[in-house]
Length: 170
Image (cartoon, rainbow, N blue to C red; front, side, top):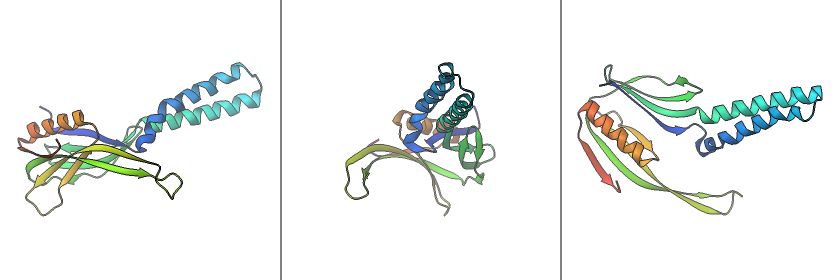
């Protein structure tokens, strides 16, 4: 059994990360457009714009936040990964007592004009809390996907041999 646990929690750019295929498609269109117009300055400009759109698409697709736990060294880190390069500091993991699994509904209003709300967004979030007896704050990992949250809590419970306490709408 592996002595580490890792999960992606959210994209760095949030919901905008789902637009990455659009930027890749724009890059492809820009790179193909010189076939229809052979001017030299047009070629250089479209290649540069296509490369910029392609890079933006890659950033949107491969930039995310995550949590990594090394059980063997008893360390934890919350990291940000941008195109595979991770940043984040390792911290000692306190002696864990149990895992707490809960879900809750999150609502937010969109105020696009800055004055009046136009529509309400509601989503269910799932949270895994690593509970210890120490006075340090507990670590929590949030998920938007129920299946991923259940798989993660089962993996953590098996790895650390801890009981799972459930509450909320789980």
